[in-house]
Length: 227
Image (cartoon, rainbow, N blue to C red; front, side, top):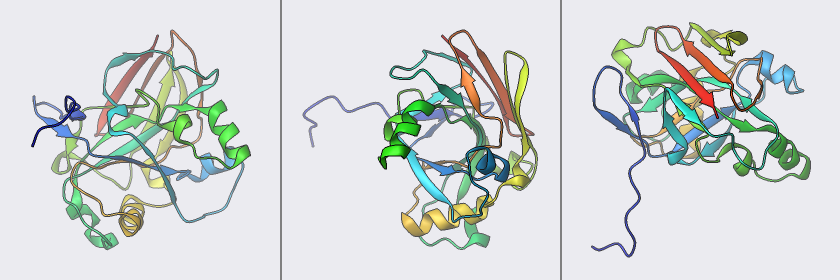
């Protein structure tokens, strides 16, 4: 078989303490999965989890320097636990989810909040608010055997040394095993899929020159400079 154009490079992420790479197939994101963030976004109900996507090549290794994106004047940070799927499946039972996880990391769901608001107001998709270039900076991934917990642990983010987000993975409305199971009912998950699991409260704007840093206990750290 011959492709009629040059085949795009495989999107991938670093693996901690090795030169290996994790191939990225798709990026799924869980919306409003921490109660305090749900409240700050204008709701207070435990609704069924919903999902949106980013393109695979939105993933960026960290530490990194990223340009302030076009078309926005209100770029927001959202720190998130990241799950890397290593074994595919459909209708995965919650208690079997861990057998499908390769590892974990920590990432930032960068969001063009003004574009998202416009999309919400007009009942349009969020694609251009969430799925733009470089919108998913992610730390080196850690194999599951080296992850201390997917059910508890501090997750935080600072901007220029000022703490903005400070939560605990245990505060998720829908746990990893729950929302991965639910997602697998909608689509067949495959090895290489990445799931960004939602953000705690404290999301806010960043501007050119800002240094974003954060992490998740025992899993990883992240640093992004906005240029």
